[in-house]
Length: 183
Picture 1 (tube, rainbow, N blue to C red):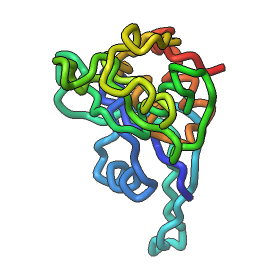
Picture 2 (picture 1 turned 180 degrees about the horizontal axis):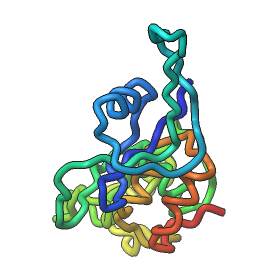
Picture 3 (picture 1 turned 180 degrees about the vertical axis):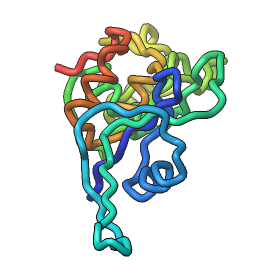
Picture 4 (picture 1 turned 45 degrees about the horizontal axis):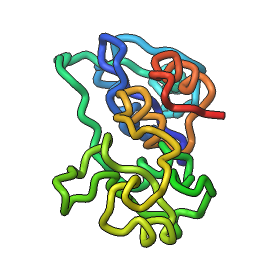
């Protein structure tokens, strides 16, 4: 089963995705402070002396105790997450492509002082990336169809998992910035 369990900190901010086994370990160590969502899976264990079998019911969302880190969330920039942010669409020609036909384009080229950061990169098809070359979109007479943005914690966790369950999606999407259009 590839379905993951959403891990939150005790303040309710998403932290990462857990496997069933990782979640079960947190449960038996009594490190889960609260949970939300439906039961994803029941894990059955051994029998007690009285013949009663142990059962762990793993919810889809768990909050764990621990230190709450304050400060800005800085999501790692990865092509697969960038392509999902931009819906596998070239932000120059507007066409959708398979992942093998996409590339990361720097709106302001690195050679001209641009940085490899979320706000300077977009998904581009190979044809448009070659056409734009080492120029700004204006210099290449190409229009940028959307403004690149940094996903917040909730958006990043959604983008990093291809199998988000409905109650996890409901929890995460409540805090989307509005820039991540899911339609």
